[in-house]
Image (cartoon, rainbow, N blue to C red):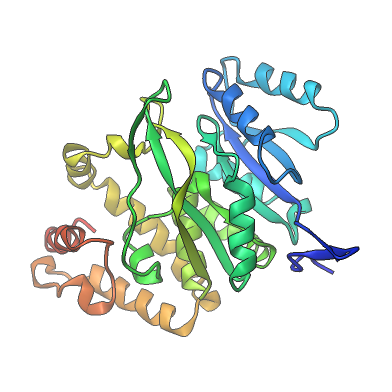
Length: 320
């Protein structure tokens, strides 16, 4: 039997599930030790830690090896990543054969988990339907862990129409129950081949497209460092940076790759999601972008009114 049973009762006491923490590293030696310590101090102690290093040239690997040696009682593994970027590295971990029917949590190398992070995620999924993934808000800090802000508290539904044009799930907060782990694993080969740009955006699209739900916890679970090595550090995405993504057509390329894999995987999407995907494809391929209807008219939206206005302007410019 797969481990879809979230709580097993032994002697009248509930036993929480074992969670596989998937951590990807690349030249993160300067920040890794505090993150590893924060995982050790989780209130939910039933976990394994699998680390995929993507070709570090600093002290990352020696740091991991010391951590493994210091905790021989734990299932802590160091694996070699595919050296094709962050998204591919996470997917290579998720594709590990032993993760059939497993609880999975994603982790980044330079964050700090609050002690309640893992246990709260499991508890909230358990109290829901079980057919949900969990993500939470984050406390933003600088590289020295001085607090500089907090991630948004989104107000609109976490649905496929939003996922097509916006990723609102911080991958470093995501926790996935067995049913959805197995679903994502069944699609990971297509996503690797399409070279999707971000693993967490892919998770958001596949989960909502297949009709699963998202828990977005208003209570933060991690301290999320913002520094020059972040791929998409939230505080660094300023107006000028966003404009450059549009001018250089980087955002269009991201959407192209996402749509390619979603089209290939259309049979596993719900009927409403397939209909929305095909309408979105038609909308994007109109030969005269200035004549495009508002994306909201086909059910595609961002999490704010200003985001909707920006999306409509991008549509007119052919920037999405």
